[in-house]
Length: 122
Image (cartoon, rainbow, N blue to C red; front, side):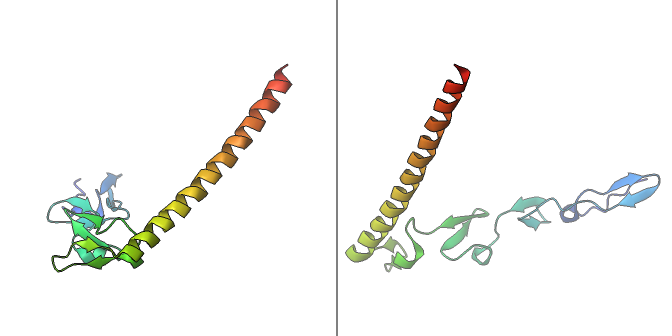
């Protein structure tokens, strides 16, 4: 018995004991393109978050800085004023500093655990 309904986006149907069972959608969290039988992140800019465009079925950020700092010139290039660039650098510096602090704390906990294990093994 052939249970395949020929539709890609609703998944591959299966057959058991003469009964057809629905398939599982193949594109969890993505967009299913029936005509191409593929899963993509986006088909157009509307499928992307603010500040991203759909390029070759993938959402790409327009600029590498925080959304609130974006400005564009006449050619649609992402540009910044000196103040905005300074604010963006400060934002990333502070974010990196926080990550570095978290890493140091984690390493300190690891050292303490290793010391305890070493003492226990002796």
